[in-house]
Each structure stands twice: as C-alpha cells, then as structure tokens.
Length: 594
Image (cartoon, rainbow, N blue to C red; front, side, top):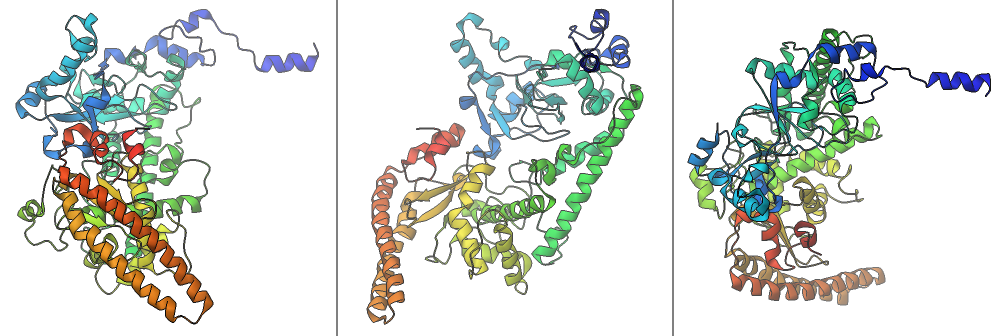
C-alpha cells in the first residue's frame, strides 16, 4: 500500500472505546460523537425523569373513525375539553386528534378529529371484535387513555428528516404515531420544548436513533439540562397565528388580505404590506430559534461543536416561502408562488363567503353544520354587507350564462371589500397574480375573463389539493365539454339541492344554449368573411357537443334528484361523494375507487 493510500485511510479511521458507547442509552455505535457529547450522556439525566412519554390511540380503522375537521358538523366537535369525563358529558362525537404530520415546529398540524363519543365506545367495540386475542380489553390498542385531553407536547414518530415538537393544548387525543409527552412539572413544559426543537437535541437523537425512528422510548433517552427561556412562548404564538391564517385551520377567521383596520387601500398595496409583515415574522422566528440554539449550546458546553444558525427553509411557517415550497428555487420563483397562492386563497375565501361558510361581518365560521340554510345565516347576521348565495349552488361556466355565477359574485365581493374606485385595479391584480403560476396568461383577455377561466378550469383542482382530497365545495360537472358545472357547499346540501339545480340552472341553460346556437347560425349565414365563417362553424360545433352533453347530464341529474339523496356528514366526504354516480368531478380521486 502506498504512503498516500495509508494517509487517506487514516483520515477516515476512527478509534473509539466500547465503554464510551455504553454511555449512550442502548449502546449504539455512534463513533462520530465527541468525548464531550459522550460525557453529557453519562452525566445528564434523561428526559424520561422529567416527563412521562406515551404512545396514544390506534383506532384500528382510520377510515371509519378519523376525519378532517372540515368534513363533519362543527357543532359535533368537542374543543378544549379538560378530561375524559368532560368529553362524555359534552355528548360530542368528534374530538381533536394529533397524529403527527409533516415537519413543523412549535404549533400546528392540527387538522384531524377522531370519534371518541362516550369515551370511545365505537372504537373500543371495533377493537375487541377485530382482535379477539385482546380478551375484551381494548387498552392494548387504545393506549394510555388517562392521558387523553391533557396539555403536553406532541411529535410525529415517523420522520424523513428533522425532529419537530409542537405544543399540544388541553383537549386533544393523541395517536400511536403522533405521540405525546407530559412533563411532571408545568414549569418544565416550555423549556423541554425549547431543548427538543434545538440543534443540541438533533445531535443527541442522531446517536440515540440514527434510523429517525422517533418513538417515545428513544425520545425519553435525550439527556436534559433545563433552561427557562422567555422566547419559547413567543415561538409558539407566532406558529399558532401562522397556522390559523389559512382556512384549513379551525382557528381561521378571515383572509389576511382583508385589512382588519378598515383601511381600503388597493389590494396590491395590501398584499405588499402583508408580505413585508410575513417576511418580518419569518426573520423574527429565525432569530428566536437561533437564540434558543445558542442558549442550549452554552448550557451543554457545545459552542465549539455546533453553530446556532437556522436556515430559512427550516423556519416552519406557512407564510415563509422557503419552508412552504422548499427545493432549489430562486427568490423570484418563491415570491411568484407565494403571491399566486395568496390570491388563490383569497378566491377560496370569497367562495366561502358566497356559500355562507364565512362572512365579512363576523369572524370565523358561520354555516358549518349539516343542512344549514340562508335563514340560519341571517339569524346570525341579519343585514350582511355581502349576502351569501340563496341556494349555495354556484355556476362555474366559461361564459356568462347566469348573473349569479361565481365570477360575477367574486367581482361583487371585491367591490364590497375594497370599493368601487379601485375595482378594476384590484381585479387586474388578482388576474395577474393567478397568471404567475395557477394558469397561463392569455393575450388580450380581460381581468374578469382571466378570473372566470381560473374558476372554471383550475379552482376545483386547487380546492382538492388544499383539502387533501376531502373537498367541502363539490363540483357537479356535465362532462369533458363543460356544458354546465357548479359548486355545491357540502354543509348546505339537502335532499332538494339536485332538483333545484335542474330547475334553476340546467333546464334554463339548455334553452340559452339553443337560442345562442340559433343566433350563431344566423351570424354565419350573414357572414361575408371566410375566416369569420370558419370561426363561427367551430364555435357552433362546440356548442352542439355541449348541448348533447347537457341533455345527457340533465337525464342523469333528474334520476338522482328523484332519489332525494341524503348525506350523513359523520360518514365523511369519501363515502358521501360516491353517492352521486358520475355527476361529480374527480370521483375516483376523492373516493379512491378504481
């Protein structure tokens, strides 16, 4: 072997004592650790002496017992209950459920609810039936129920990257893969959260669980030196505010683009101010996390081995494009994506106001329970500045066939919020923003036509992605030629909705198409231009296809309308969406059926 090869081998050769490895709980061969880190394992007490760490509920059938909160009746969700007895007394069926989720620190990832009515009677019955070897005892799967609803800290046991710990307020049930810990002293809760979200803990967890298996047993072995930090509560507050700024959170109140101060500045200026605020928030979070890292690096004597810096892509705020989009993207690409998505979210919020889910006059949810009506809305808001749709049926058409279609109603929404004078300027900004990423720009197209094209071609796809294939606005569609499409709000659907869709929209549209074809035929006969004649012939051919499609759709719609189909929101979107044959778009994607 040459001298050069010997020197190269020496560079990659580690000499370590087996006795040192035994200082690490479980004795893993973590040969890269410094003597200082090994000594910390030997000297510091493990986390399990400061907190009890627990696995939680395995339902045995998530399809049956777990829902996204937006699928079910809001008044059937028990929020903030302090214990099991209070949950039973509430007679609520659904309760917040922590199941881990993606990499996010401090707060958030709260999207799910679980059926725990009567102390989980349905789940327990299912478990003992499915697993007879449990001898009638469901606690083997419904683990640690006495810790349900307690305040603590939660994380995902499965991760493809960094560990992230979130504050779990009172009122949550936690899962087997969304595990939780409960400090013996409330004073230790935030310091433990700060430690485990620091770079110091990353160093320890790499040694304890190099396979990124973050089960309670591994987390409990982290050596703990506690430091009281004021910034942890601020980090939690920032993260929670960020989480609740998006409509998939049950704490969402209204679009952040609507200025709560009442200033009617142009929409573009409002977005620029909001973007500056988000940038400042992300930088504040980054600074606070770096301070947190520094405090623990100093406490453990690891300032020579670690650096406190936190890259922006690890600042886990949805308003931070570096984290939200990740990847190898330029600043310009990140800004375009964020602007486009923020305006898409405004359109979605406006649809919610049209449906009565939200209101410009009151924060939070308005109509979010089964079979609610316009009268239910008016009982809460007798004189709305922007009234919701009477029947929660919103046409999405590529032409203006109905005065109350989604496009015209969006125009009115923008006018009501920001006023008459900047209306066109604001519509222009919405259209330009949508063309940054959601749809391609089209030369010569008006802003309102661009918005109409977005609503008729892309909105529902975005809605499906936002709600993770559990849409709350359902797209009824006549087929690929898009003769007729409309959105129906799940929580305002009733047994008469389809009949009303026929009489108020589909049958009148058939007559309008017939009249329009006759007009185009006359224009074609009168045309003296070959190019114009060809264009008219092409449009007439398209309309003939739409007429045939609409006639077929009307026949199917009549068949289903006669059935007066009812829904049970407890069954979830996946089940209910499959009750309408192929009247709905993206059925396979939602129901999972092939």
